[in-house]
Amino acid sequence: MTKRAPRAKFLLIDRSGSRNKYDNKALQENPSLDIKRLRCSIEHVDLSKVETLKDVMSLCAVCKHFCGSATDAGIRCLANGIAGGLSLNGFVLVPCCHHKSRYSEYCGREFLAEWNLDSEGDFAALRLVAAWAVCGITLRKGEDVDLCAQVVDPETARTGTDSEVSIIEKGDAICQKERAERLESWDPQWKEELGRRAKMVLETGRARYLTKIGFTTKVIKYVPETVSPENLLILGIKEPACP
Image (cartoon, rainbow, N blue to C red):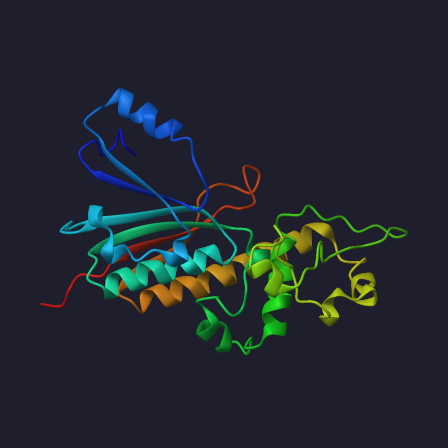
């Protein structure tokens, strides 16, 4: 990106620490680059108050590998920045790890409600199905089936005391063994296809939310599943102002 737009300003936001390896390399190649890095969780960032972005008339956000609900936090960060006067012309959001999304933070609840998916349980089921697209699951008789991976308390995961977030909530009926046994006869390829469709539904809900804050959006499959099963992005372009 620095080579494509060498005169642009770059603000990098990371949750964890960084050695600035690529920042330093880019600056060695072009010392005139304007690069700043913030170390902060995206949900705590108010873009309208970041000095680097003040008085900038054209902004583009690129968000890569926003894991689970971090995508929703990033979307709210952009929406709050726009409400604070930020001039955002477009964005590319590349989410991943849909099984780590949380219903309470998901931006597309209104879209799901249009299809009668309006509860924690419905979202847990959708999230579970989405995981089929990436886990390479193959069910075989005679084996113990764990469709739920690791189930942890959502409150514990939210505070960061555990590195994993549950695929479904504790005690949810979907996690019961008898439910898993019913799925043994399902073709693995069909389950992966259902998983891809569930991921598309989740991203369509987010895209619909973004249209309501003034963007034309599109969910795009940017690489085939053989390259990466995490292959969806949301492209947004600011709608032109009415004359």
